[in-house]
Image (tube, rainbow, N blue to C red; front, side, top):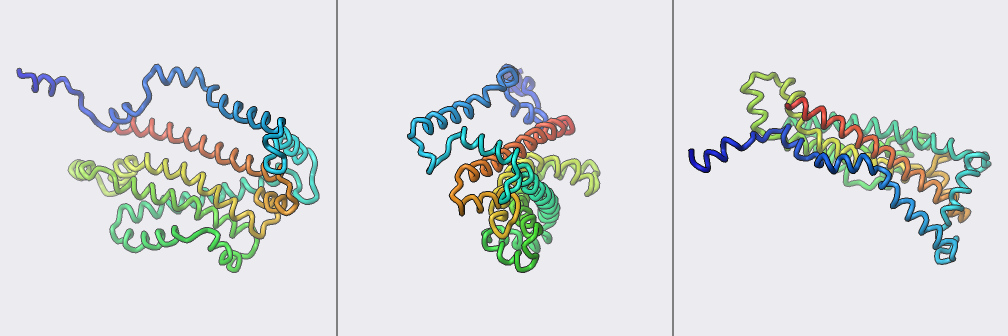
Length: 289
């Protein structure tokens, strides 16, 4: 047996399960990350401490950037006291979270449906993809006046803006994931006698999952940016309304409170998607195996 043959016999078969396993960090690194999870909060604490120090020493004047202590005091006051202008902070947060949650869910579902139609059908791609790409190029600020004319000044136009913010990144990534599935896997499924439905559910969609989940993470951020835009136009409640009103009265501390809450919403959404991603990719590797 020659050297090349020995290498060939000793070489393991590289399949999807092996590829998924190769993407996982080494066991020692995983153990380190699990045991030292608290390191993730060290840098934010250091940054906040430095920010407070610069504010206390006057390097950062309150007229430009208020201190973390002032922001915390403002947030506490808004939580414990109902302002005649803003109401309570938790009420504004609940309004914004509801708009974002409804819009994000609807946008994600529509994006997945469109990506499946255009990704699996050439006719669907020719008919629908140009429309989606054209809409994706329109700035959200340009759509808001039309939405107000069509749907009024209630919650509906704001939710629809969030829908568009979530839809486009989810659609693009899911579509790309479906189209990037190895054609040889599809051929193998046909050879094994899989029906079209089985081919889609057992080969195409599991293969598209990594990119679809990336689109979901991008959709979280994009939909929050859309929410910020939507809530600052003809709104009478929500975090965006707080920012717009506080800007008129030069209340930078309230603006910072609202922005931090937007950031917390985005961080929570991204964390949930990352947890979902781990679970789904683990299921996918076991399913393929």
